Amino acid sequence: MSGTTLQDFLITPPDKRVYVGIPRPRYAPSVAAGMIAGFVALGLWAALGRIVDGSSSWQPFHQLAAVFLGAEALDPIGSYDLPMIGIAIAMVLAAGALVGVALSRIVIGAKPRSAPVIGLVAGLALYGLTFYGFAYFFPWFADARGWIPLVAFAASGLFLTLLYRPFKFQRKQNDLQ
Figure (cartoon, rainbow, N blue to C red):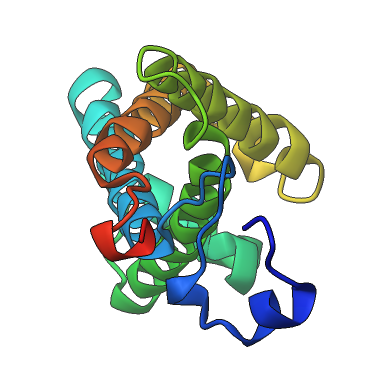
């Protein structure tokens, strides 16, 4: 970009700009990876809860939907309720997209070997935020603390970075000219 004025930079379409030394993530893959990783977390949480504890597979869905619907969404927690499942899935998609974009900004500049560790730490941090930070406002998350959602969130963060890495920023040949 040497010799380029700010005006030239601003009128150049974003897809034609060349950023030297500043890696930029690709947002569509990061959003997709985040959404898929959110489903992985929700699926692991539901499946492991059912297999290990014998709890209802719908429990995580009810707990997530109760953030918008209130505590009455928790009763009865083991029942199948399509609107609650829809709300929980929408929350997972939205949160996954946000986490995917945020994590892609961190992982894009990381060394390939450290990216999975970053994802694992991010998953654990998200677990802490959800089950300890949000529990102040939504006390049912305090009751759900345990190793099952911890494993689900950690695996989700790890999976997000592993899924995103193949799609990370790569310069196009025409951008280098």
